[in-house]
Image 1 (cartoon, rainbow, N blue to C red):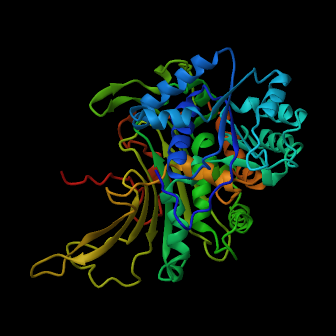
Image 2: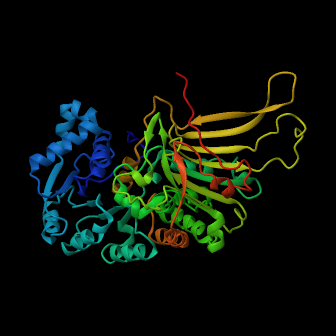
Image 3: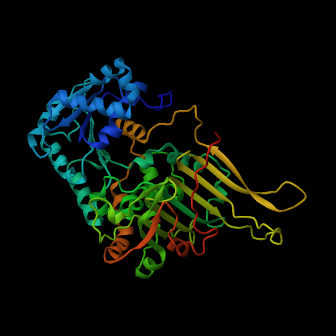
Amino acid sequence: MVTAGNNIQTADPSNIVIFGVTGDLSKRKLMPALVRMLCCGLVHDDSKILGVVNNRSEEVWLNLVREGMQQFSPEIIEDEEKWQRFKSRLIMVPGDLGDETTYQRVADALVTLDGKKNAMFYCAIPPEWYGTVTRGLHQAGLANEEEGYRRLVIEKPFGHNLASAQELNKELQSVFHENQIYRIDHYLGKESVQNLLVFRFANSIMEPLWNRNYIDHIQISTSETLGIEYRAKYYEKSGALRDMIQSHIMQMMTLVAMEPPVEFTADAVRDEKMKVLNAIRSIGPEQIKTDTVSAQYASGTVDGEHVPAYVSEENVSPESSTETFAAVRFYIDNWRWQGVPFILWTGKRLQEKVSEVMIRFRRPPFNLFNTHASIPAANALVFRLQPDGGIVFRLNAKKPGLTTDNETMVMRAPYADDTEEVADAYEILMHDVLIGDRTLFSRADEVETSWEIVEPILHAWENRVSIERYRAGTWDVPAMDALTRDCVGGWHKPTVHKKPA
């Protein structure tokens, strides 16, 4: 939980309207985040939380909210006073998303706070309902800002391909102005991701090195030990490329590669991110063969337990060729990054659960120690996003004793120690919506350009009849060695730093 300080903008009181309030996202993330935000002042104390609920009484809904708190925010339920304070802010709006009268009931339920009816509409619903909700809000006059601000929040995926993303943006923008639309990517709300920008632009020591003259390549990765869990129906239509690379990981790449914005404002930052996306070299059929990897997990052992293959998971076709591992080698054709490979990869059922950005520097132009037993490794700077978020710098140092042999010295700078509280991504992002800060949210042109970049790969992969397999619980993806063939140090397989007991 983050604490509101003197340099944190206080949000005006607002009506926080959640569509899909009885769903998993609301239970796991939104409600616990709102409780913590209310407790520490990130949500104005007069704000109201309106849940649109279908086929349930208010008593049943409140019991569901309480059960969710017991599971994901037990500290609130243990404190009856805190629970009653939170409960007093909850307002149930009965109705079905497909019924246009529901949206009029939402309009009637909005509370006037400090003379305004500010409203944030959070769509914690499947993407196929975004258009229905948007039209319903329009028909009820809820996109009009005469009585207060109106902000629409939607979760990824923002479309399934370029055409559907364009159609979604067209539909949203037919009702709301672009500055009212908040396309939320929870990865960009992580404290350690935001620290990328601060590290780059608040420290002059790195700027001379942050280019093609000193950096050999960059690997941006997200690996998981879990499988698809209950998401089979979604994942069969998505796959790892759509699910992670097109959104989360490409967004992180833009933060790593962007130029300094002229000011730290939403459009200035997003303009620089767009320049990166526009500079990405297009991928043709031959490059798809050599510069992409797709694979699917077979059965194996994770944390000492046998786990099934992807094709044996519930609701997955035994003939499925959906990728659970995806990697792409991108090039950014501009002055700073010309010729530097950006390797983006993600996978499920791998050996470790780790998300990080690894910058591998070039080897020294002349190595005095080549004749010795140990050749110095190339330096690496690692931004660990999760777990144990922080920065790791790998340098070469002399081994102790009467020798000039060297070893790798690892310098660790944890993002926060055990006594510091780090804000949850949803706390940060919902607070940004409430204060109208769009810096960490995707703009329409960003979404469409990222789909345009990956669409040739999607088309090529959709025509495949088979896919490479890797053993669950391992790094056994042989094609990655070919993908990183000329990268210093090859494929970087993350390891989790074990804290001493």
